[in-house]
Image (cartoon, rainbow over all chains, first blue to last red; front, top):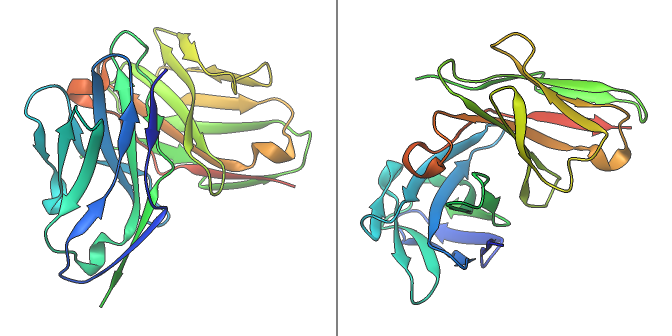
Length: 114
Length: 116
């Protein structure tokens, strides 16, 4: 069965600083990987996804993530944090032929200081 | 942009009561899902639904839970006799294709269920 670990339940950065949210996955078969963002009182919004094409994936709002098979990682980055990036971020994995359900990590709450 | 709509946004119910959470998926989507998130915990898969039947369910989705697509537009989750531990945010999602790789899911804003 697949699983996802997000290191750091809370991450705090200053506005303009680099954002790095960590995600490691476990899967016996090639995974599909996703990052979702949840703003307060809202649903889960897809930021980006990896589907076995390019290993560097660009998403919305200036975020990107790189799939590194050797490290089983899919870390989310953004060069310069904005106050509006403050939210909860979830990494998720799905695998072909193991159903179409998503397995989520525990989430990382990003705080952006002025 | 098409949305998945969930109602109500908040529901408070007494332990032992039945609740029905409602969702209107995106109109041309074929696959429907329920997930839940207990406060402070991970988002967990409950059930997927396709062609008017359950295609997958997790161990959480026991006999107290049921899903239905009663009229071709709504997708409901029923909890027959609620327990305190059912208190959570419940998310509905829909997708056009089975494999989320190309299309991903679209999630609703969730229903916060509080069992007292």
